[in-house]
Length: 279
Image 1 (cartoon, rainbow, N blue to C red):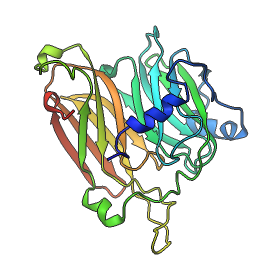
Image 2 (image 1 turned 45 degrees about the vertical axis):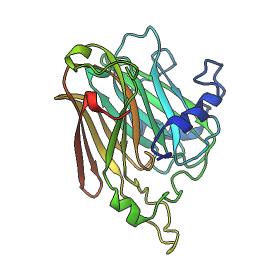
Image 3 (image 1 turned 120 degrees about the horizontal axis):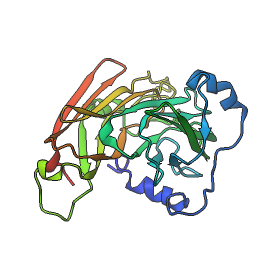
């Protein structure tokens, strides 16, 4: 369960001072890798390198290279809506971690997930607004071996729980239950957790020492009623047992629905009543 929750890893992130409001200790560093990658990621799109639109927080030295927490937060006072987000780990074998499309009810972005980082690397985010402007920011993370790290459980145990989902809700925990209609327009916080080993194809079976074939969730869609909150198209660098914590605006519907598909074509889908979500 510890690997599913962001609490411990976020505590490690807090210790870097990035979230606590101190000066950033691990800004992006110059390197040739991004020069070579840039065109493949964004082609000729001009990038504004700035924290003006949003920030990305990540630990300077990761506690676990296979579950590195990242937290994207829209900067206070910025009004442009982030419509698309691209996460990149420069030095990973497959540098583009994921591309996210965000629906209107995500509002001012506040989004967390966990990544694999294979070697000391820049971890960068590119946010594209509705108007087409592209901003880039990120952090330099000291971590190694995240993409080749063995899974935390054996294959049989992983398959037994494959695709099981859980949602936690963090807002209004001290308040009596309200109908969804009563919360229309309120900002709410939820965390989605999905059981899946997300094999990268670079780790070895600890008994046979053979490479474990890649199998990971490459499509994820989260809906509030019929409205899309966000869609992810991902590669090998999202961590085992993917977890996403996010803030959204309640649209008055009764449910959150999750659709996920992995690279073997297996589909996992579940609908949760919003006001009966486990704390």
